[in-house]
Length: 220
Image 1 (spheres, rainbow, N blue to C red):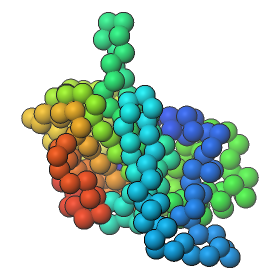
Image 2: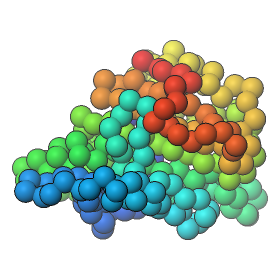
Image 3: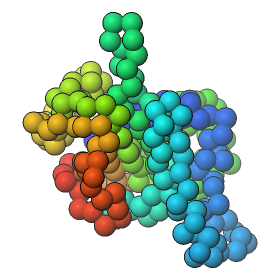
Image 4: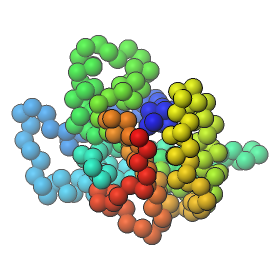
């Protein structure tokens, strides 16, 4: 379910961050052989660091833990805009996360094996890798849940119909039906190694302690 939903987003991130991709997933939180363990205090300071989406001004944590995942690292963030007439209106900012240590290990193996020949190979490695992935979306304008779904359905419906997973799509859509997604709302979507997709929505004033929240919906 997660790979069908996020294929376009992941490929966009890989292309957008291509030059610094290896640095992005091999940041200091990834412990290499012979490297001393980072002191707890430094790890706490690092966890407070953020990456800023310059187009929208939204900031996301570089290190984020989602409920049952290990620490995840942000690959980067970008803004989704929708064109009304001739004006591009910012709708939301989205950040991509991966389980850093598992991702770095797997991509290292693939790199040494000569797997990466073009951009599509990087996309495939992120989508198929045996590590959790996440998308964290922050709304920067008010939208209805159905409007948000309509934008996603353009990509989702054809792919999931082809894969015979329309029941999963319907379950995903139920999460947003009848909801008002005001500016500042966050939508966290976490894909597990086994293919489950966890979704949770938090309002502007709600706690963003994702390490301790219970997902609103798990789509298997």
